[in-house]
Length: 114
Length: 115
Image (cartoon, rainbow over all chains, first blue to last red; front, top):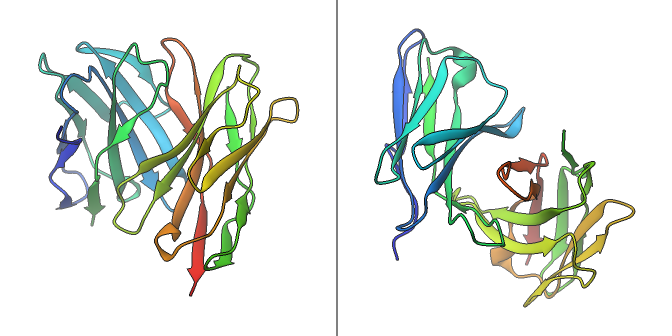
């Protein structure tokens, strides 16, 4: 079974631009979560989508948004990029109903804002 | 709110030796899961071990085992017979059960393995 895939793997953007990152979960997984990883703040939860609905949201400004499609693929969008948005963005999928609550992570998208 | 604390930013272990990584957490909930995740330099985060809070027995996975002290809210990871491939960043994480199942991570600890 294929793992979680994220595209693109690397991205360089300029301040003020917007960016869209994509995540394809493991087949059959209906929950997709997004995390931001930075050296200073560590791993922080952005949001979770389940069955095309945002179920949980972390403490990030409204510039960060996401959506999930009917095939469970998810995208996150960051508008009006700031230098501080430079980070590794990880997505994780899980099989709801599984008692372990285990999340499977993708390789991440490295976003650099200049 | 849940918090996870990993107070040791770095640790080093000799190959074939045993090392213990510390983690403490705080939650007012009684039903939750605890995890240790490994993030090698390639950046793919993988699950090392999982512990259900309602289980008193400590989880083990081959060379990896945990010491779960629920009353003390402590969840340490022991790696036995350390191997060069164990070198990575290790994150302790907590997830509540139910709909609010997001992972709350600690800051992580960088483990190096000396040959």
